[in-house]
Length: 114
Length: 113
Image (cartoon, rainbow over all chains, first blue to last red; front, side):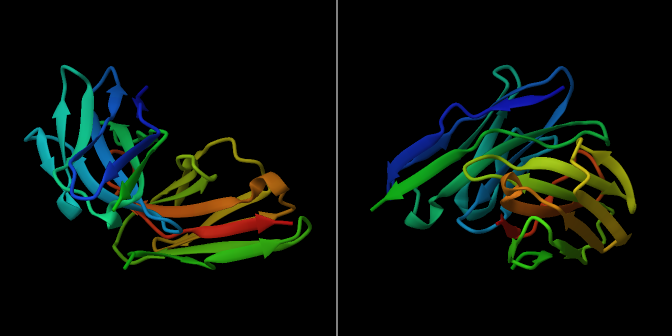
């Protein structure tokens, strides 16, 4: 079974500063990893995904994440945040089998201040 | 614009009412999902349909009844709900079930009086 941990429940940051949202996973098999963003009163939007290949994954809105197998991590980064990035961010993991469910972390609230 | 459409956006109902939530996607996806999300929590999986057949029921109470009339539509029938069922109900779809990115709708905000 897979699990995912987001250690930071809230991350406050000033506009134009860099940010890193941490995600660690646990699995005994190969995994697929995802980051989703949820803006207020909306559903979840896929930011980026790691399925295989290059460990540095680029997503939408200037976000990127790096898959680190040895550290079982998939941290999300953005070099310069905007006020509009204020949202809830969920890391999620799925096993490689075609019947594996998506397991979500508890979420990180990114609050960008002017 | 979301590619998964959910209606209604908001729903208020009494504990004795019967109502339905609807979800539609036209991406040709063959897996569809219902999630429940409480405030400040991650989504919790309720049901999975794969090729219009129910594949997973996460021990959801029978007052929630899913239905998949065809590959584009997913319904969630509600009856005799409890106040603790108030939540955001999210529908999602993916190309097939398992290890695929899921596309989410904006959800139905349900309030039980």
